[in-house]
Amino acid sequence: MEVENNTPTLIEEGYSPEAIANLERAVEEFAESLLVIKSEDANIKVFQSLQITMNGRKRRIGDLGNVDSPENPMKIQLMIYNKEHIEQVLEFIKQNGFPAKNEEGSQFIHVRVPKPSRMQLEEIGDDVNRRTNATGSRLTKIKTNTSLRIRAAVEKEFIDQRIAGIATKKIDTNLERCTKEVRIIGLMKRKQILGSFFRTVERDDADLIKIINKRVKLEQRRIENENQLRIQAEALENQKNEEVKSNNIASVEQANGITSPITIN
Image (cartoon, rainbow, N blue to C red; front, side):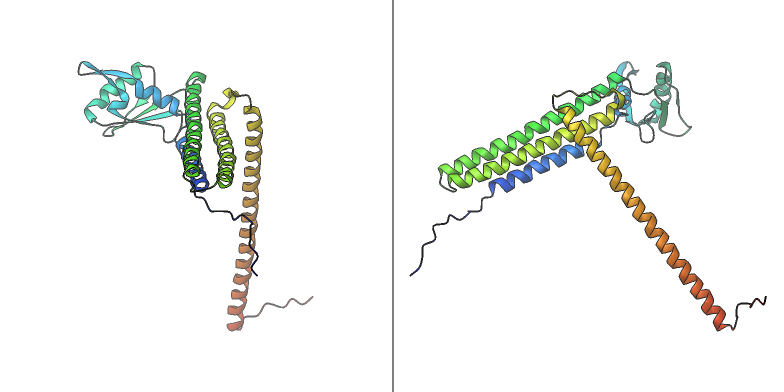
């Protein structure tokens, strides 16, 4: 006689895996978007917005050429698209108090600039904050949209209430984790940009800073360990090479009938 198994089976649902993947993708894209933000952006923005009168009308420097700081935040590099504009742009920059030079035949103008001011750096920090908040809203929207789909699936009896509850709990847990990660990434970027001007804003920023400091220490320790292992491996490799070299020399000497001199006391 067969015994009926009343143990409920866990029906596979695709709502939570899809939502979790979308949450993690949002975090990755947010982190990637911050890679291009640097403290030197403050001076770059200043030069992009400078207005010069060309042929009787106002033009932004950013419209006349590419503004970049590839080597040093204290140096701005302008690549002027039209060579006929170079001399006028160069003179304009000098008149605005910036030391600038252009090598003959080059489309590049090199400009020395002061360190970004606190206000300039805080503007970049505010941009990081806006991106952080926007990503937080994106994460919440992912959760909301998935919750609506789960509710519709329950109403249409595609999944039962128990499975819906399990899926929702998974999504809530990962939403909290990803939201915290976004906050940490944003804080790390703001701290990097503002330096000594950095101040906490949100109530729990201080707690997140502790997590950041711990991560930094762990990363430094990991790098130190990797360097130590690399040095040891290189030393061992050099030792082996010396032994091989000595053995080769000894083999050649033996083949040629060369013996080491014997010292008689």
